[in-house]
Amino acid sequence: MNIGWLTLLLLLPFVGAIATMLVPKAKALTAKQVALGFSLVTLVLTVIVAIGYHRNGAADYAETHTWIKAFGAHYALGLDGLGIVMVVLTALLSPIVIIASWNDAAHGRWSEKSFFAWILGLEALSIGVFSATDVFLFYVLFEATLIPMYFLIGGFGGPQRSYAAVKFLLYSLLGGLLMLASVVGLYVVSAKHGAPSYLLADMVKLDISQNTERWLFLGFFFAFAVKAPMVPFHTWLPDAAGEATPGTSVLLVGILDKIGTFGMIRFCLGLFPNASQWATPVILVLALISVLYGALLAIGQTDIKRLIAYTSISHFGFIVMGIFALTSQGLTGSTLYMFNHGLSTAALFLVAGYLISRRGSARIADYGGVEKVAPVLAGTFLFAGLSSLALPGLSPFISEFMVLAGTFSRHKVIAVIAVLGIVLAALYILLMYQRTMTGPVRDGIEKLKDLNPREVLAIAPLVILIIGLGIFPKPIVDIIKPAVDSTMQRVGVTDKAPQIPVTEGQK
Image 1 (tube, rainbow, N blue to C red):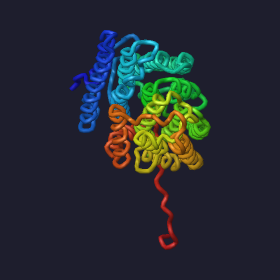
Image 2: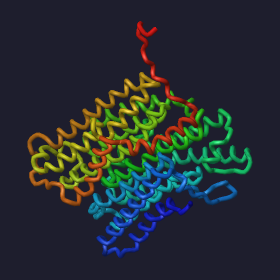
Image 3: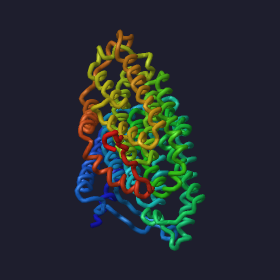
Image 4: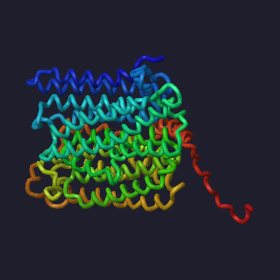
């Protein structure tokens, strides 16, 4: 029965954003409390939806209403295993960011309440993007997510915030423009087959010629490669993450950038299966370059936040590799990686933010001996770093292993070379920890305060989930697997059967 659960999920943060803005400017604390309250209610509702999905499947959450009849556009929402995982991640990170960023907007260009209102606005739009089952609706929401992120970076970031925000916007708009061309192309193809429709269920039935499919695929893929981001479309991310507040960086890398890899699965593989296979060799090479290039640049960084941003470029390379390996294990691993990367990078950015706010500097050279004066902060920083480098027993390890195993079964050379990314990850994480946390206590570090209860509260859910899913990832894998199987069937590829050596005695 259609009870509008997804519409309610989408509207709650929007209402919260408006309510937050209506709070008088003099009552900044009340505005924060209102924003946190709405984000927590959204999280609770998301958990209810996720439990219902796990028990009954996606049918209960489908909503379809005619929107623009002449275009064949619909207000259509629905969930599959990929969508529900990303909606849960969005709803989880939003209240964590609000708690962690409680005092981060005090010196911004605009009022504190606008900072938290934009967070809720981004949450609402992201939930809509991950739930949209109409291509036109997806495109509108995809572009709309740029608005709150632009203001979060440009209004509350560091000294170069305007430059970083404009660069982020220009790159994203360029990708969106090419996607728009493909969206229009889909309308033309759909109209030739009768009444136009942007519904995904109708789009997958279209008979598209080979050349047309490839051109349409490229428009979507370029937009998603910019968003992900992949080399060579990545240069906006270090600037944006380096200038943004830590909480904004979490939303940027943990949620917004995932729209790129989400779109590759939902639209590139789902709508253009033949073109996806055609482009696979080039995309795998680009993904491999992203893995190694991002890791190498991370090693050479002198700024903590920019270092974390480059690690994410490397991690996104792994995710894209798993997607276009075109194996069920690789695709499952990539989807799981999207969720786990959101957790580990959120922890790393937030703890780095705590550290930077105390010292007033993001330069690695300004630190040393922190573990002697702030052991809880240092320990949490080490845990987040070990999670980022995919230490066995923590959740990113499972997804990274699945990506590499799935890739190896079909593209052995790519997978073998990509393993170097794991080695480099250990290098850049451990070097960063050594330079900032160990050794003699540097001047200015002696009075560094350890984490307070609010900061521990923000990090604790991430730590629990990273450990829990590292030990027992089955609940999420079970949700993801049916969507992966459906995508594989749509692309028309099957996993290779394992080759068992035959001994002389068995012949």
